Length: 132
Image (cartoon, rainbow, N blue to C red; front, side, top):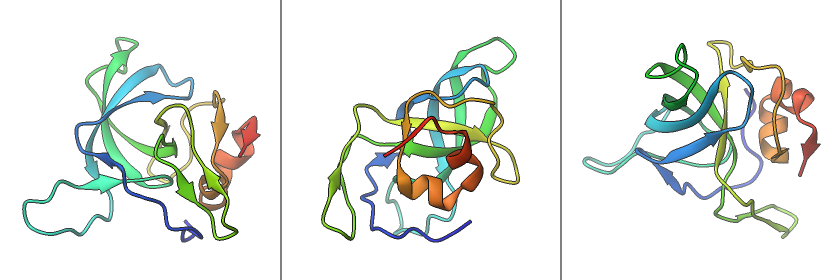
């Protein structure tokens, strides 16, 4: 996993419900914990674009529901500023379910994927239909 090139705002906290943008069977997920978050005491863990988290599946197929899975954020509503000065924003917050090797569990991704995520997770970038 590569380091992020741009500083992304961490706008998604624990408890946030998001769309699952792949075909694993999960439709809506909720953030439980954030990987690699080292914060201040009693501060809610937050995450942003390209971060890895443990999520629970709230809506989806019966075999996926109520399961704890790992996921990567591929889109967020809060705008991000790239080093070139370009500002990017998306219409929704979305994740992709991944396995222990940080490879996607699904076979297709719906909607655009941020370039920062495609650089950090090459398998997600190769599956994406559109990289912004």
